[in-house]
Length: 302
Image (tube, rainbow, N blue to C red; front, side):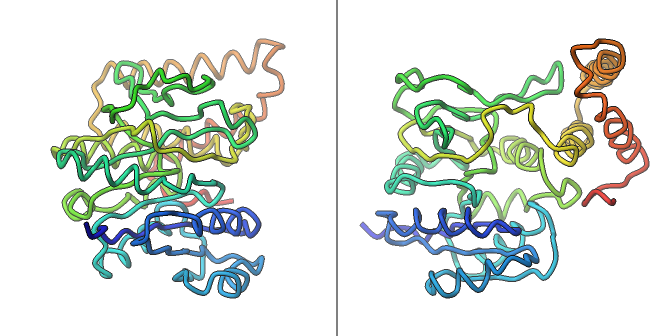
């Protein structure tokens, strides 16, 4: 049987070593109809030159500037659509994939035409038996999301068959061509964080099923301590959570609970000694909320 043409979009911004490691793992894919597209977001670390030298078969697109996760991937998605790709996958550059990743994911979709979006089991790179994500769930009462299975050892608890989830992380998201054409691309307002969750909500509301495929595996070089986030990451997570609630038309109760949570967090960081190492984020929180309120979206301006 002929394999459907599939484009894998790898986004890079000044992460040469990680990107080269990711591309090396993609060289070992057993799926033969995969086309790799590297989108470079204006890097200055010689990544583009290294990729062209080491991986001449990879299509390289230079944006010339940092367009974020959304803008960079959207350029890659448009290129893949114009090239006739039947499936398009977003893949973080700080990942290592199993050789049969695409075979397993696409076979699951070919076996079940109702599946529009799928994602693999993603493990921590530094603890390769520990799950980082087995799909994602949305708590609409509180306006929060979580990675399913995070911190667990994979002992078969996710089963073998694809299982429906609320979203799959943009770290590794595979979707049919018609989903992108029907739902549209990522929203550039987000720049980074929450964008794939909002996109998955659009896809689900458009009638496409979203699933985690347990047998598909990859490893992510994400820190084991998720709390060790930068001020930049915290800014986007805070502002874009509100943007997500707006775009998904969340109810009043969700909004009130979200804002109450922000207020409690701010108070805890201010008053409780155990959180003194987080006090520097209070100003970041206030700025993120202000920027949302005044319509300052896209890239965080210094």
